[in-house]
Image (tube, rainbow, N blue to C red):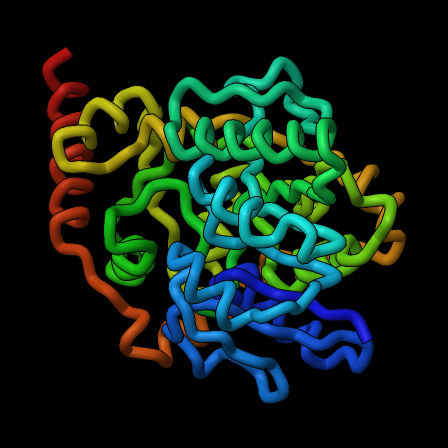
Length: 341
């Protein structure tokens, strides 16, 4: 039996992987986290309740265990992966690090993205930190043989959230509410840039295929859906699922970044550094390592699952009146400018 340790294990991506892996009799699954969202941990999965930053406590709880895979989902900065290196050097046969497709060069020289696309993002500190983590881990692989695999997700979603381009600090729901109320919805750019959204259960198929896979050691892989949509198509699909007419209001990413900065909306990072740039992911490398990887849940199906769940679960309906008012002011100001020109 193979042993996997998930650091985190209850998030959008990791929970789907843990769920699928828990049904595989060939794997013994353990999650290590602070004990939040224990309700999503499947039966048969062992929970180690600990703060990963308390290295002494973690070592006392894992004992002399050696894992076939250590799966890191909450490592965002170099000190955090340095911590993991100290904890798991010699204790794992594979360390899988979740990076981000936002680390790819912005804007990329080609809209077709492969694992060989340069890594550089001057617009988003989050992405630069992920790049630095990758560089540290790959250095340890090259110099010491530390068995790292890099995984770069793009925009992955589940039944608890709806993927959007422009939203406030409290998440997606206020945009859904605007659609339901027949209010105009801000979409970055002219809505024609290409984007990829991935259902978390599809992502899990690719990820699990890389676990204990000898072809994955020392390599980086992107895991995304093969379905590519424009942002207008994404928003239109959401509106169609809600049975509402979409009232799109297109605003440049540069304007949104400038208008949102003083309100704490980081649109330079999330838009200019990520979602406003057309990308089409080439998953050929992943499919060579995991031949059965595919897109099993298209966006029209996934968003229906998500919206049905959100609209029947009050705690997921988090309103954001500050963002709602900001949208109205942005639209009102631009309409006034049109009249004055």
